Amino acid sequence: MTPATATEPNLKTVRPPDLHVVDMTKQFGSLVALENVSLHLKPGTFHALLGENGAGKSTLVKCIMGFYKPTSGDIFIDGAKVQTTNPRDAHKYGIGMVYQHFTSVPAMTVAENLVLSRYDSSTVINWKSEMEQLRSFMASSPFQVPLETPIAQLAAGQKQKLEILKQLYLHSRILILDEPTSVLTPAEADEVLGLLRQQVTNGEISVLMISHKFREVTAFVDEITVLRKGKFAGHGLVQDLSVGDMAEMMMGEKKEPTPVNKLDHPEVAPVLQVRNLHANKDNGVEAVSDVDLTVHSGEIVGIAGISGNGQRELVEVLAGQRDATSGEVLVKGEPYGATRAEMAKHKIYALPEEPLRNACVPHMSVAENMALRTFDRPPK
Image (cartoon, rainbow, N blue to C red; front, side, top):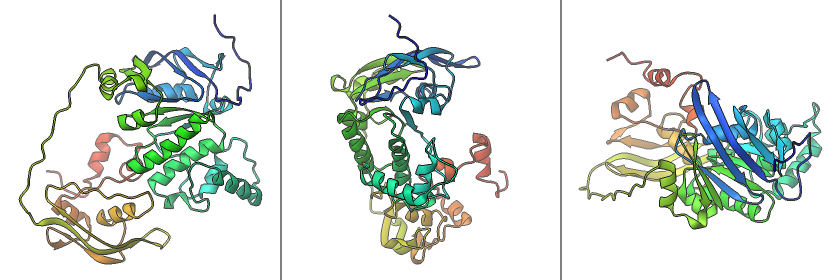
């Protein structure tokens, strides 16, 4: 029996809505990005959408959100057939999405971005009243971000938390998360997903998460749907599947991990030395205080810490993107000021925490971005 088509219904109920995608297909010209894919997100469950890059995961959720018009296929909310022609339609049915790249306005504060995210914001805003409501919302939220802080001063992990808070602020009952932990430390990822898991368990929301991280899937997720090359490749309860089972669905073949033996290296001179380094945040408050660090050849050194504790500022000093207020940096025993000439001489490269914002020009091609990196060097 085919469910009846809904006409402008208000489908937000006490429990999260039931979302069912049936036989979804999306073509871009001759390219079939998605072919007859079905997915069922049950109310009050945490569902992971797995697949390798290019498997069609983002295409599927963008069809659900109304960014893409599917070539064919249907979406049902609580058994009623609906159409989402834009994100406003999706919001009407209680669906919100946290995108892979941040959507906040860097020059505005956290509070201003939260108000801006509302679909019903008035042209004249009573900030006294709004701030009271925002403080009340933040006090009851699963995690905190300072309301008065400009977005540009937030660490990447805090920005990601804000993107999730936006959807909770909009009362979204179905949260679609596109690789939400890609900029988070493992501890931050566990914090964020653990708090969302608690809301799912309480029946407050349902979550559909795109992820590549099996550790997070096995720890927090109820069910998975797997895509491979734009097609449905498998489904199951996480409790019934091993990591090997999920990997086999994703890749289409079973692969055994290859053991890696670490080699013992003889004692070598350090390649990087940081001594008594101090550096400030953008607002002038000290972020890096008296840091000492030594890295030897052949080592991988990790810098741990919750977002906002100076990791970004330390890396920016080493990459020449921020001035140190005091201290010394040596590379192979030589004083290092992170100039382009010094970085080229010592073959030092930096990958920032937000590559799309700080390491490439989005409207330019891959080739143009690669050429731009060496614009001041003669061709070889």
